[in-house]
Image (tube, rainbow, N blue to C red; front, side, top):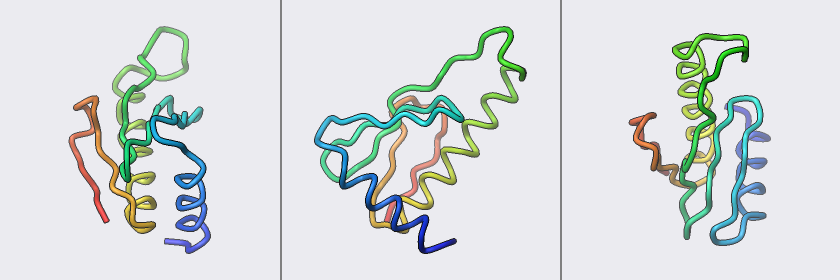
Length: 92
């Protein structure tokens, strides 16, 4: 894991105020800062015409969530999934 990605994660988290949101356009994931946690609160739903099947989108979102959560965990930030879909909690 590149240290610059860990530092980027720390800096992003610091810019979020309590309740602030961060959207990830590439995967349609929406996170919210709550205290010292980053919470996945919403996922872009699949719809016809986005260029991949519903299952492909779900797998892409899960992989992106895991990468984000691992970088955040390395930065000392616990990531939780309020949507119940990703089913993996990665903490510092």
